[in-house]
Length: 398
Image (cartoon, rainbow, N blue to C red; front, side, top):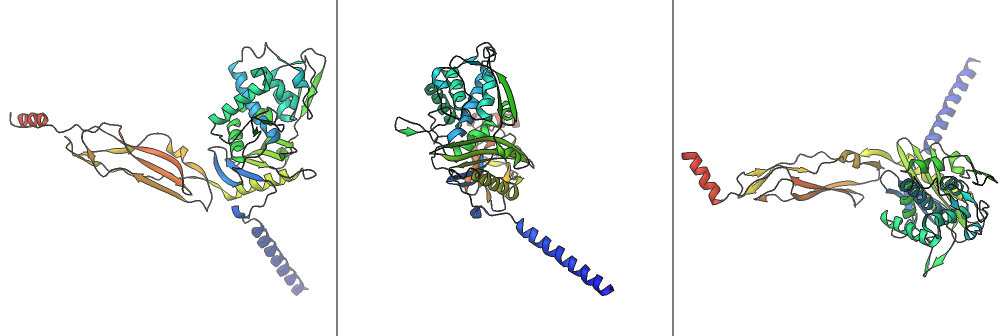
C-alpha cells in the first residue's frame, strides 16, 4: 500500500511536470514571420508613437468600408469643439439625400432634426450610413465637400495613400479613383482619433438613447463591436463591410502600459464574418507577448572641441534639450536592432556662436531613422583678431 502511494505520487508529479512543460511550449511568443491571418492586409501599430510593429501588405491600397467613419467621427468632434456655441442651437436637419442611404441605416426621414453629438453614437455604435451623410452635409453642405475635408485631414496626418469619397465608406469611384486606404494609413488615423477623450467615450459606450428633436421619435443604438468582450483592455474601434472591401476591423487595446492599434482589411467575405475577430486577437496577442517598453536613450558625454583662431582654445558642445527619455521610450522586441550615430566635426573655426548646430545624434531602429537630435555649441567663442591681440598685450604690460 505504501509503495502504491509512492508510485501514485511519482506519477502525479510527472503529470504536473508534463503539463507545465506543454503549457510553457504553448506560451512561447510567435515570431512575426509565423503569424497567419486571413486578411488581405494586416497591421499592428504602437498608438503612442505610430511605430509599426507588424505588417502584412500594410501599404497596399484597399477599400476600407465603414472604418471610414473613424475619420467622419473625429472631424465631427473637432467641429463641435470649434463651434461649441452654435452646434447646440443649430441642429442637424436631414436631407432627402441623407435619408435615402442604403442599410445599415438609422431610418431618418427628410426634415428630421438631431443634435450633432447624438448622431455620433449612431455613427460609431451601429455604423448608420444615413447618419454619416447627414453629419457631412451639416458640417460642409455636401458629402463631396466633406470628403475634401477628410482628405485634407488625412494628408495633415501623413496619410498619403488614402482617398476618401464618401463619409460612410460605401464603395465609390470619382475622378478615376476609388474610395481606399492602406492599413498603415488607417492605423495612423485611428491612433490620432484615440487621443480625443470624447472619441474614446463614444466607442466604449454600450448603448445610447437620443430623441429626434420634434419629440415624435426616440432612438436607441447598441454597440456592435464584439472585440470589446474578446480581450482584457479592449477599447474598440470600428467594424466595416462592403462587397469590395470584405470584412474589415480597426481595433484598439490598452494593457500593461501598451496602447496597440490593429487593422485588418479584407478579412474574408460571407459567411466568414468572424475571421476579423480571429485576426485581431492574433495581432494583439503578438504585440502583448512580443514587445516590452524600453528606453533606447544612450548617455554620452560630449567633450569640448578645439577652436581654431579663437580667443578660447575650445568650445563646449551638447545635444539639443527636450524630453529625450520620453521620446526614446518605445515598444521593442528581442529581434529589434537599435543603433546610434553621432556626426559632428573634430574641430571648429572661430567665431563660434552659442547654439549653432554642428551635427546630429541619430537613433535607428532596424535600420530606419527613428529620432534625430541636433548637436549644438554650448558657448560662444570670438575670433582672435589683430586688435584683440594688441589689447591683450596692452593689458599684460600696461
